[in-house]
Figure 1 (cartoon, rainbow over the protein chains, first blue to last red):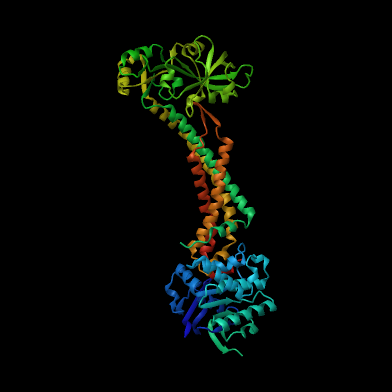
Figure 2 (cartoon, one colour):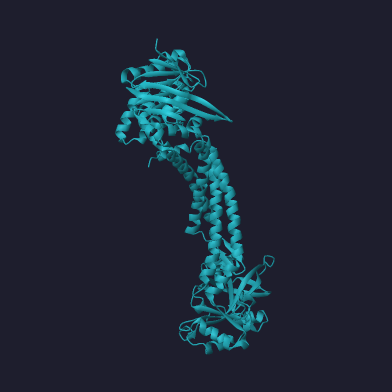
Length: 228
Length: 387
């Protein structure tokens, strides 16, 4: 069953007097519980696709259904609300709030949900444990290594138990050891929880951790391969 | 409504402390300026407003309605007026009819002639306290006729550098004549507090004049129409009558340009300080374009992020402006301001504090607008890419 269904999806930008077709009638389905790597050269439209899936950008035309919701029908605030319930987003540069501790950063998206303080606490503790940072609750981002920061960001993305985890080059700013640790974590989440993951990467070895790799070229689907 | 926790907002202010302090300082200066301007205008309005009473009228020389100091009427007018108008208020057999002379004269402490000041001197008779009930003799006694004696309001004494509590017995020189202060009076918030009072006959002699300035009459059953009928029936006396309230209202209108100037200058200076504070805040917050976009990506609606920024700006700007208002009150509260009608005290009341706080809130709104407009104008993917 498809969690994501793109039909003839287009995204155009105006650059000067020229129209750039970043996504050009893209058709793509992503199954619930799958683990997909999005690859392609710079400008191929992979980050744009990820942003469209997250509802932080809007398609110029075409149809995009995520978990049964037609995102084109939602306004900006409705999209924010929808995102808080359905999507976890992991950024390349972590984007933790610098004045909040690891615990508070993870708790941030939960504050949008109607939960008791005890339930919130349980979920934050669980999320931090799942990324092996149970002993770093009180640490501020500046007191953490890059890998630890990214794991806090992943805990933040997972804490709302979203249907879809989106990651934009999650290892792009990490050394090999930390990148492997993050990829191990993604693999574990997918294997143990059946988490649907869509991840943008430039790195073939990172992409090989996914179940399948979708390659985009000039805004179109070039190839779709199962993992080796 | 979805909001970020207040504690997080407060912690957000600890970032860029230099800019936060700069914003605090700008708001403080703006709040202090606005509160001081309000205290100035409020003090002037209160002084002129509390001096007037709805039941009192002033009979003065025709054509001198704008200034009692220019008015001259015959010394026999009070007697003729008493006999002609029925229904004047009476206490213990004495009619509330006060013959007065108002003059502005150079005044100085004896032995310190270099430090002269202009004081408003009122020549009064026994009925003066009946028509000026706001005045209280707080020390000493009433001045005796022909004894070179004078009494003074607390503000008048302070302006001349004399402590009201030790003023009795002090000697001053008025228009070259040495006088002894035998009494002190208070009329809080009234122009009378800044005046010098001496017997009518003594000021008449000192000024070598045969006329008085005006008659102040407190009406009981009589109306201003009755007094007007009197002045019209005695055209030979060349009199005009004004309700005391109208006279002081016209004075307030006369000072309108000064008040407008004070308000405009203070507002412009406050605006400069406010914009300085607002731009410091905006600079601190505009670095958070990506953070705002991250919050939006996490699911926070835009209005929640904007409200958070506004809340942080409000905490800084309103607290700065309120402290500015209180600081101005501490520095300038009770300060006397001289004007041609005497003196008034800067009035740091609830309005001054409220205006300081409102100024802070305006700074906060400007800062929040400047802080968020760049983020609002950017699509979220672009905002996420900003550094």
